[in-house]
Image 1 (spheres, rainbow, N blue to C red):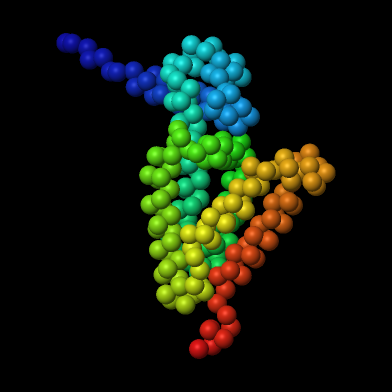
Image 2: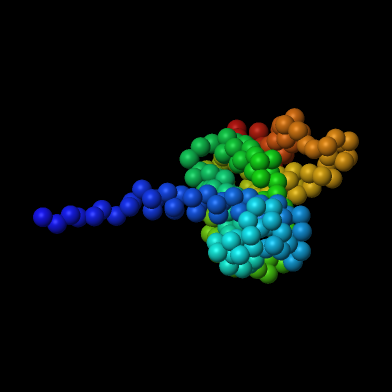
Length: 222
């Protein structure tokens, strides 16, 4: 009677989990280094040192700096677009959707300030390394969001508005609380922005956005 040997599935699974965790840990460190130094100023050696790895060990997972940089931006964009996708659903009233959208964008700025800054620096520099991915992934979702605005306008739920520039304005207002947080903190004479600052920002931005799409009373009565 022959003995059938089973493959060491648990060990393989554990190895995959460990690799995924290690890559995620490397990315967390890389986000901070790229945010502080930019792509050109950052080095694999610095990232490896901060991650507690040798340069050779890190390069086993990410063979080049550009590969690691693109992984960082992939993760940033995944998170950013996931929050953006809630608007494209369009299955709630506009006011509730827009409020939740602003909340999600500000939450990203508060929870992921370094990630936001890496993305902003890439865009400000002309998106030379990541422009194709931004265009490929952001543009289709932006068009979906604009279509939702057009449906709301056609149904008389919101006033006619340039949806593209309204979204640009929301992005700029919410992301500034990550990208320019140090300046804001200096002006406010504190070490960093706190929860109340984000709550106040949310209220103001939501009020501005809802005012922009508000249907005049005379129109509503017609």
